[in-house]
Length: 333
Image 1 (cartoon, rainbow, N blue to C red):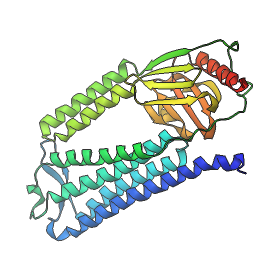
Image 2 (spheres, rainbow, N blue to C red; image 1 turned 135 degrees about the vertical axis):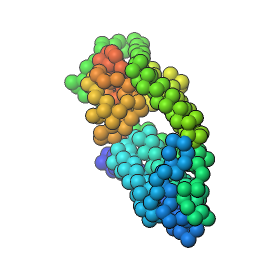
Image 3 (tube, rainbow, N blue to C red; image 1 turned 180 degrees about the vertical axis):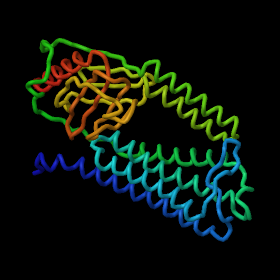
């Protein structure tokens, strides 16, 4: 017979396996890329170009060894960092997917960027004769993003983890009759300040692309626009199925079934301190955060050591209704 303690260990074992696997994969990608770069030593100028100016011309130079230590060292730090996030804070599938995908993206992006810039210098006597790196930047962006997204999509989701335990006695509730139906719907967005910052960032990236000829920056600008569209306006719904938080575009979304709700409550959210910023975030302790503003938020603690925080007005009413619905579901045979 499997005990409750043994069942609780399963998600943690899964989290450790995923974290260690993506860390090993990311470091292996960087190691292979470094080996390829070192095999080119005899065909590369000394020093090699490591920085390109606004006009797309090389304006920074260093030795091959220093270039590799800098580029691949940064890549290794990113892989280890996101691998640690996946291992330590990957209680929920969405956290594991984000952490794993970002670790693989960091490894591939640094590897492709480093190899691309060095390949452009093969056979040159002077690194100042190297051309622009717009094509390399585009290849690094596209070539790293697609596999990273695929990794995130292929990772399995969380299995159902229902509980029959009652909702915490001290949790707020609203009175509900046995057959009474109730729904709460709220909306949350980032506000005009974030929109202005996003618009300015896109304008700057487009301007740099035009001036420098690094057209790969247009891909970054397009990705940034897409990020703002899908990540900064959400609908929050509490009903007889549980909690649903859905982007205004339909994706991303997250759901907490009623039979996994341990307790819902109101918290005061500080985006930078607790989540490192705004948007769809992983916070301290592995909390999933849909954090668009500072202030009042809905905290839903669920089975498997997981929790969700959503900044939304009226969080108190949403929490009380969710507690009542979860209680009623468990009392219903």
